[in-house]
Image (cartoon, rainbow over all chains, first blue to last red; front, side):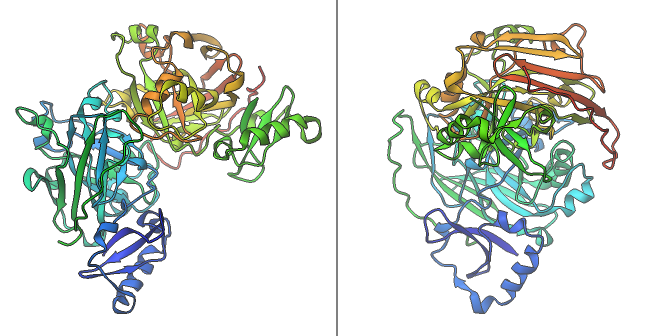
Length: 299
Length: 299
């Protein structure tokens, strides 16, 4: 099953939906995040999906209404340096422990949303598989962690490298509001393959290509590790790190320009397509440019 | 005015209170955090405090019921390396930018709560002044930031140095659930002095002593800086960093032992007193020991 969070007609409100090939079915939850807090979510979603023809709404035209998959995720925990090839391009050794950092839900944007970045001229990409938590997980082992994963989605941990490298801690370069696209859908864990390809594109040119089978810390191991010190709960999300091909690792380094389109794709889940708008003015009243709508959920 | 979050009789519920010399007055909010989300909070609190004799409850005996001041803080953003003397003891140069990292509200505990640490034997202390946000602050200057500070409180950014130093990112050593005491009260900004003394004690022995006048990035500057990339909202909290005297900086390094009492004090605000319980067993069913109640809010 593929589940998404759509923006509804009313300003600021969202709704969880089950996404089919050409249609979607509204679910009685405000988002995939709040859906996961209901123990019975799977039954509700499957019931709705099985009656697809009755409640189904044509998908066409709805793609631009994708909200961040988990608009109110309490924890968005990220792993850096987790693909062998990316670790090598950053000039580092294979790690004994996962490198973890935190961000807040304010960083999240929808799969087709524009990304406005203010005050950085080193905006870089990090295509990632994201793991959506479906149970309370505290001090669990890898088997329990795997059983507690609700599903998988796509993220791009867009990083302001100038801010990230101002100090030893990456947080400030990773925590710009509304710069981390998450979606378009959560593929439920029962339908997930053993591993995923992860692709990143800038203006249609492929810049990143990886496979999660090469993760140093795979989803279950990562979730189990994090659960040793903090409880993960339904609707929390763990970003598993990015494969090689980030702009900072290129020679010379390459960063996103105003107007660039950043595409992040995991075949079998879906695709994020976000246009980047850069502004360096310090005028808080600057009006954001109008987005040219792009379709993204259809594979 | 001094405001606190008390645990009420029913399991898991809390209430905001105004704290006087010997009494407290219940306020119609679930916590100081939810109080700050009401624009009219100051008037409500002052009204309640002015009628102190009517609604007042004796303070004696209530101290052990202190909840974390902001039990559901959406953002707990911390600054490291912010006191000149602490920077020197860590062997680093004075910074151009604040070193920032994030934690989640799950890390917070009350001013008198025991702190249970599982799986670390390098548990260290970091006495800190914490700034409580009272307005929506996004891309503000220092004057606006100062006007948006609701008040000040005391924190100890208890740090698991073994986990903190496993990787380049400190998060995992700073994010253990229920290890960061916050409280006992918020001193409202209108009553705050120009600077605060910050003291840390282990079993009554003073280990840390600093004054916030020596902060590299003071409260307003820090809040203004953070607001350049993320919106701060009422009830969010910013930890301003710790002065010299942490255990890791001692020769030889010194860490907390099972049963130690960690005291964190900012005269004029109040005192945290937390007993440390260490366990290295990997049995999630281990029962936490019973806390010997200690009085802490009285100065």
